[in-house]
Image 1 (tube, one colour):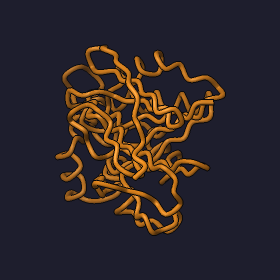
Image 2: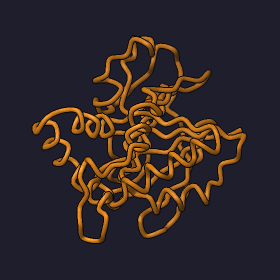
Image 3: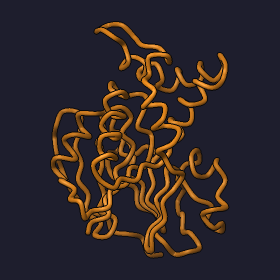
Image 4: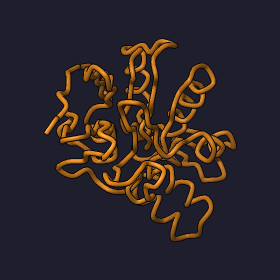
Length: 229
């Protein structure tokens, strides 16, 4: 069994489809998405459709990212929350919900099944015997059920993040514009800037092998060496 984590997708459906086809997860593999499925890239609608289909056909864990939180806040809140969301990629997300080319959609055009997915199908983190999967960061001295929201969804990865459990943290959120996963003592970040000209990354957490696809359909692979000190 492989433990496969996929970093921040941000509306990049074509790289997601290419990556899944290449990695070819089996029913025995654990598949974990690290959040930030929406905004910035061209096809938020397509990405949410794809993830919803995956969850119906096989066990899949989808974490909640800060961009999903902002999209939900834009729906529930007022003008200020919507303006904030639009400024950080919501505009591109709504563009994918237009009924015809060149016409942007509105929050009312987002189908109920997508709101249900964002509200009810996402989890704040996933913890296994060896790993902690989280969108952003963890506070190293806190148990996972005591982690504050600002750590789980908003903080950026520093020079180390060794949780007291000794488990390796696999995270996204901190964009690696180099396109290469960032390895620090205790953690690996696989947000490799898919929407901004970088790569979408899938990491086999156990072996350290990773696969990457970009918006041009190019592929490459590598391996991370976990920092032990």
